[in-house]
Length: 605
Image (cartoon, rainbow, N blue to C red; front, side, top):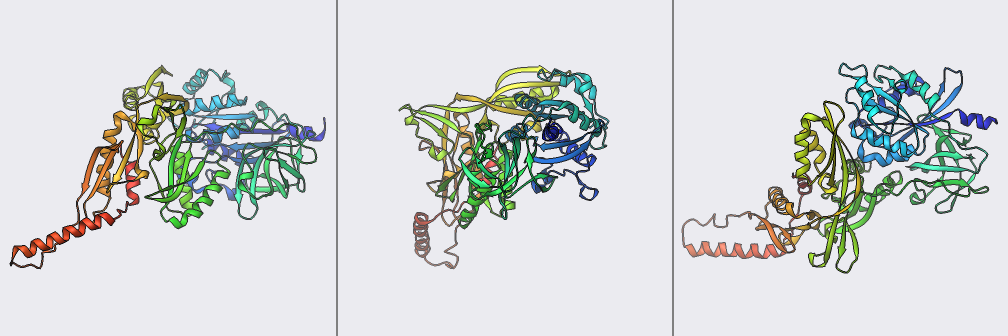
């Protein structure tokens, strides 16, 4: 065995997977402290969550990589590469990308909350990637913890095939079980399989943009090695580059002489165009290229769509550049330019879920200082026309007229909800109101149940999560995945202000709910839109048929205030003149719709 092979055998690449708020980031902190990766001076909570939004919301949004040195009980030195992953359902694609760069995963479960919906989803994801799973029950220091009950729940996950002695009891807060976790990583997770003698194959699992160094790609070296001054090529588009710098994450970037098979690190090679470096692509050596590229990642499909416009149209160029930079390390973000009569130029964007939408919007506003208006979120509908043409429509403005449509289908999701059994009645009522179709219910123990439903995606993208938490006093957890398209009776409702269609306020909805939602929107707009010098009608229409109307009364100037007594014809003349002026103004007048109108519609139940 060569020295290089021996080096590869002492590498362990692993992720930490968990339901949101089960202590994943805190366990990562303890591992970094125990291995001396971070100094006493750099100690803080959520070390790897360096984005301001992550620290503020207490969640991990982007995957992070960090390298640790650990001397095990067998007196050997190991390199441990941790790829930290998000826990929220909207970022499951980010998790799947990270897992494909690993050989093992720490499965963290809260000792008080037990197995949650996202725990089951993450276990399935880990098994698809053929990872070795190390189960950890965290927060055992809390008075309400019940590790025995959680172990039984873990045994109930059929894919796991656990032995009781494999479960590690830990408390990241009290630093209990940290040494046992590190030993389990070394003993149970296999080393990487690649060889440093083979041609270079490096999988790009993430990338970031640096204004001074250009695009920096995060790679897992599967085979071969790479060092500065090497000529490399990206296998998807055959673009050639010269490597300037390679390095590792410690947790900050630290340059090294080379990266070999099994290692996780970064490459800087003057990647000028953001679009040329795709996540999931393979980098190889130009002089000795690999024959086949690595499998990469399946193309991700956005689930939720909305239009984003700058409040000031002069900011359009900045918004375009900001979205390009965000797309660099978030390949699940979809964008295409569009224009609106009411809002000017903007982008139609696709997201993995509502939290993803919210995070992107906040990052655009904070990191790039752009004030935005976002329209009501919608999903991708599949429309079969009478000419047998299939259209994919996410924007109400592209929705064809009823005369042209043969069939409309909308995406459905398979929804898993885990909740204390006493809240099941209220949750089932909520699902019924949202057109959910009951599939199965099973009890995990005497106090908790798992519900399986099929439900239209459009019914859960707005306020479903908040309603679910409200119905279950915060105890229910959910996970979902797309299960296909099903035919539905859908309508496009257009909103007209002063007889002009405001396409940014129009929406697609099920026929049963069209009237009630149209009525609520016109009532809300009546409250929000300021009064003009003339009367402004607000209407909701389906195929030119008005289904709801409200009228904003005109501001009235008292033109006869100075007429003290005297002839009535003088007063009548002044009122007629005012009326004619208002009629003329109405023809020319453009009603400004404030930003609150778009935000207010999102809050309508």
